[in-house]
Image 1 (cartoon, rainbow, N blue to C red):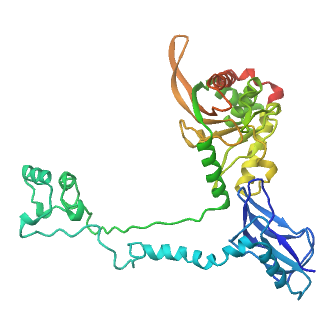
Image 2 (cartoon, one colour):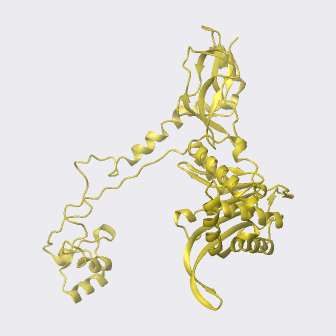
Image 3 (cartoon, helix red, strand yellow):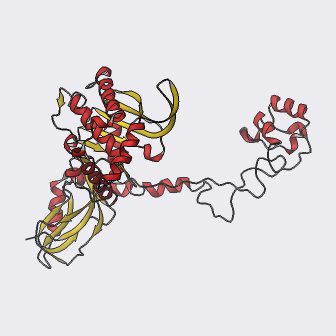
Length: 430
């Protein structure tokens, strides 16, 4: 008997899935556990394996199209079996979807309509007949008929300029002060346009991926529902730089500054458990475990895989785990278990040359730590100004769960650990 295969819920926040690729065609026989399709969720592209066996009679979603969770993904059954009655029954069982059906023909042309509305703009115009950016310079026989502001006329008179040779950029070609100021600065001796230059307007529109939609929704919810406040601190990284060089000289796996930062944050969280918390609306959850989310940039946005029990792991273990997660994120191979359960998050843009920034809290965490670049700086040691290394960090806090004094105490411990790495490092920590 024919059976409906429904769009699975592959993550806790997934509301719809996009079929990025079908691995089976209509008429193919599918065995249990066999790969049927690749589905793009709000987190990653995941492989969907069949829980049923039979012939693929119908594919309910085209490649590149989306379907809601529990929507009809496919129908399996016996070869030649009639499945249309099954689809009809599905439509009757979902009156809301049936009610929305008549609107579909109207909703679909909305995209072409938007393009049609934009058709008069220069974007779709043939390249062979572009509209000039400005009117060509041409003397006007009657200077009194030129449109120019009183200030522009006075400035032109003072500078000895002939308004007939000045292009106006005000309303309806009116000459204004900026046109007079620009006139003698232009390389073509006065016009606003470079010789031979023709300007056209245009734009590209990119369809949102499931991941980008979810990022936009979750970050908007976080930013506008959680009262953020920010704590910034500067850290002397001189000893951390020396410690890293010493570690990498003997350790089998290279240690990055990000690994040291993650380790220091985990140890500071152990000393300040109130920062390792989540806001749950009517209560605050204080986590006994320390699971640190590490923001990883991918083409579609940002993923946050989680290093679990980070305070109990060595630098080598942390480094190897973060590298593995980063590669899986880029390959879209992360699984729900890889990104769930964070209690604190670190976002490091220092490696991209960003000196300082503020990050939006990653729910359900109460805090996120933004890491800036390590820069050369003048520092005072023993009463003398010497060359040193400085790094700025900014912690975004949810004021409903974490107060300023609590966040400040955490940052002081965090700074102490990085400025004195011997406090967090031993052979067993490498």
